[in-house]
Image 1: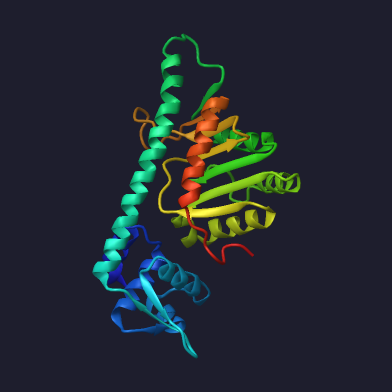
Image 2 (image 1 turned 180 degrees about the vertical axis):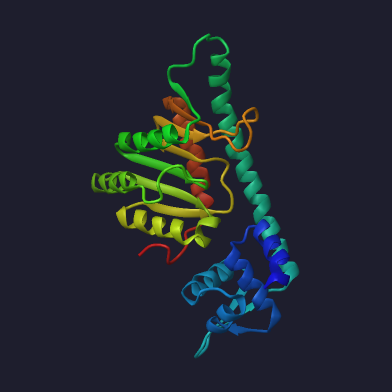
Length: 271
């Protein structure tokens, strides 16, 4: 498998999850495979290969051949790469719309802040991981009817996030909404995937996408917690903004829904 690491990485860069890349490369080697055969050839767990094949077929990167035992074959590499490139262009256009909306929302807040000699009382800047984790717990607890999240590593809250599970149950019992979008990397991390299943059982709706612009949580279109790259402190420093600003929160909620509409559901991630 080491000789295939470079093409696997290239396919991941074009938007495939790592298991999807392995399975596609295995399918390319022969005219067709059964699910069991391609699982062995691609070194993918048998329980995952059906979901992976289904995703490749839905994305028109593989073809299913019904029969007593179904078989699968890859589409021509030039067509597969062209389709993945088209999806990447769509992704970039979508992220461009999200970034434009985010910029439009943040610039007035930033400009207004230039006129103040003290920090804005509705913006709290957090750099300590413990403080960020506490703010994450706090914003979940304050949600009364809607909780929306962009979830991407690294995570500052405990993996189990027991308070978050309780909040998801509470909101769904009261008719509220809990939605989260994860990056495709979550599908290759059993710990994260198990947490996705637990939240799904508690009532969270989830979808997956190749990239997310930042970590974000929006509660009730009123409260926002998001991470912000810090060009001064360096890439290793965690910086977050905790903001109580309905106009900004409403704008970021629209950005979330834009990503949600084009994100993918993945069969088998929930119990």
